[in-house]
Length: 237
Length: 340
Image (cartoon, rainbow over all chains, first blue to last red):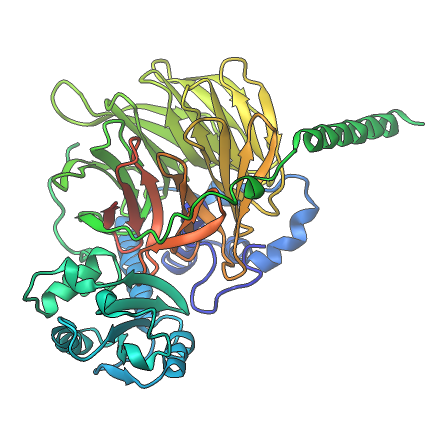
């Protein structure tokens, strides 16, 4: 079952124990000198990495994830090779997840249909933040301004806003739950914050909204993770 | 009729008897029983702390017994013990092998253990006389990767391995006390019972087994998954177990009824489950998937009620504290986050 319906963006076996095995196989195939691994071993690693080719071996009664020959290939590795490999892994993941459309303004949605369209049709990696507001409601204006700032700082996130009356579900968004912030990705509701301003001070700014969304892990990381070249803290040996 | 044929028929008939016995006690489905229970509502957890210090993907983490300290293992070849309240690193332990699959914290807080593609379980003493952390024992005997390890006490630890067996070790002498054999595929995960008398293992033969630690016998076997079981854990009251599989589902099996009570799956989820952790009450179930996503399930209604790490899928491993006060997720970007 694993690998049979492969997500185009991410290869299979990223996490868990098989993730470690997968990482090791990739390291052996891509990072080390060609000479250190004979061609037949490289072929074995390539075959074991491909879940489809392994399904033919299911004749065997015992389901093994690593072959005996691979176990023999495990040895002391060069620290430099490892360091480069790790950097490469992280870089790839960041690139893979930053690929996608970019935006720089807050989009005004005119109707319920436009709302559904934006939730369902956006790229599966794009985070969609929708602000449901209305004129005269406290906090809506300020929140709109904050989102305009954030839209410029987070180009991969699509910020939108829609008047409660335009949604076609006006009764659900009565004055006391506005402003409401809804967060979607790939058609799925990730965050639902009604009367979101109650979580913030009377006067709030873009950074307050940013911090709020970050608390729930909803905004992309601005910082690239720890640079592998940093000097490590003194180790306790 | 030949000998083999007779035995085969006997095995088939026994299997039928077991199925019939299980059906006989199944008077109600869990879903019918809980249809009247009120819904849990959306679960939106907040990040309370971020632990920075690793340089690469976090492969595994485990909470200590005091629910303040935890240990994490990363592709950067380090084991770090964190004080999750202050976010300080209490210990940074360099490992011989960077392909580490599991780490464990002893209930006493005196030791941590880890292992992976080196086929060994290395035990580290955190309370050495001179304040340094040293390797105390290297438990080597498995002929396959070390997929999981859990301490029973400072003198005993259980390991599961890619060689299809699990093992009970005497840490003092570094020898194997009991070998639990029976799985037909790599053992991927193990879970310790709250009373430490039994443990469960999930394997690549699509089954989960319940073992008696003292007599080494397999007491129960649970089938039903259509692919490898990658993650396993006890339900908090010890009467049920939860398994997570490459077939993109999680299953709840009751130990006394000896059968499956619930399956947690959704047609939109197509990748395998690689980690799981129930909440303290058991009402919520956190599940980590192969695409780095993490879903929160309502255990009683088998509905998804939330998701962690909403933006980038980042969760590579996770764990819930013993008192249920927080959960920790490790990511491919080297950070760990504490949520509640």
